[in-house]
Image 1 (cartoon, rainbow, N blue to C red):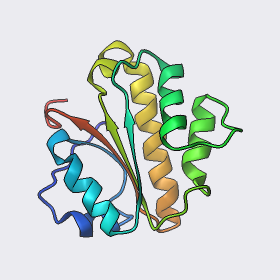
Image 2 (cartoon, rainbow, N blue to C red):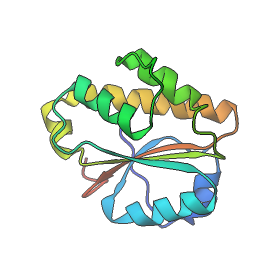
Image 3 (tube, one colour):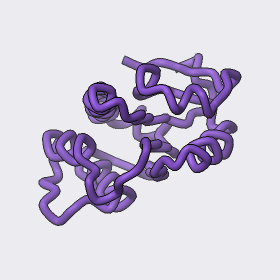
Image 4 (cartoon, rainbow, N blue to C red):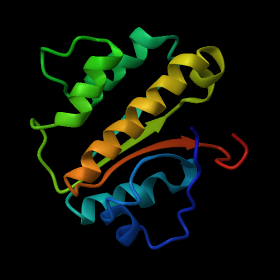
Length: 146
């Protein structure tokens, strides 16, 4: 499910709240504001660039590189879910993933894009149980048009 969020809310308070965390579409012009707010909160933040991404295998490699996944990462959806629910190699007070360059990938491989959002949302739900904010923000031109 794609959801949009407006950065007009006080970002620090919003990002710090695990109950609000999840996977959202946001205006790409807000990238720096989200990154700054996450840094102030002591979050681990990572940008995952999907420019030119063609398929599932490519997308999974981009996650692995950006998040420095362990060698045991199995390059499938379950392994992505496992890594996102662990993150023990990058301990932090919360997590912020900024997904950039997704427009073409979303058009050419909608199924993989949608599964990715589901995996990210499931990871956020798992972290909520631990009271740790986990945000996955898909940066787009117009989050309300998607």
